[in-house]
Length: 399
Ligand code: SF4
Ligand code: SF4
Image (cartoon, rainbow, N blue to C red; front, top):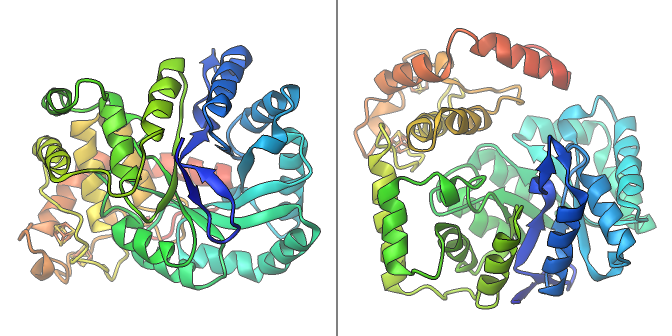
């Protein structure tokens, strides 16, 4: 196992972190025997970072039970998350935190994240509720060791949030097909100047493992028969010096075994030009499967109406290359569906500000209309309203 130092705490973290959200399940219930096998195999192989969250059903309890039963709590770092979107006020911070401690059977959280920040307004609301004082108290008592946030919004707001508080780590989505998505490579580099950056979705929720176009799989196979497409995806992330660790949602023994084998050699700068060319060719195939040739460069942003233009196109493309459900998930995430500033195609007022800036000369307005028709079907507004009601976030502004 390779380790990278968290420069804020001095902790020596395994480059392979265990994303517990994908623990094996039986009829929707965590399979404790299989999950325990995976966790213990990972620990035996040197993994020392385990990521869970308050909102993953049954997940904190499962992890806490396994670590407690095997008396290995002190051998690992636990990361879990405050469910920001569920918080109705400052009293909820303490309530959610204490519940996490109880479920995880521990007296402290090593890496505590504000879960799924999507924009600066959301962060400012938490500040107005006194979250900075609450964090300070928890740090002083030792119940929170390192404080960070996970992020799923636009790059501009990410950079502002990074600069707005002395964070000790952050967690972003990043993989070889998302180099310019959400925080993106610019966000990764800026954040890494200040704090360790943990990577989630290194395989886009498994879609770069088992939902690739057939030609892309064949390119990977020809280039390295002993590495799966998933392994190629992880190596791309580990190759980057700015990455502290990545989280892999392992749900089978074979995945743990391959990931441990790859993590032995996971060094920054390990990929040569030949290997980088393989990713380029795979991306070409993926991009051909895409309908709108948007490179995600962001030159057309910001839109005065808050439309996340590259995010809308990315979700639409993904609905063809990896499937409608996966594409829709990506689409609703990128338009900031839990945010007050949701930026879906139907918010476009056709002002034309964006089009002159696109180096690909894309007819953005026309393309947004195409995206709207497919990704905002008749049930979309009602579905989002129900989702927001569940989260207690009220109506979608401008929807
Ligand atoms: S044309 Fe639409 S997407 Fe482009 S800047 Fe104007 S409102 Fe935004
Ligand atoms: S400028 Fe064009 S290519 Fe770049 S993100 Fe916007 S639409 Fe995509």
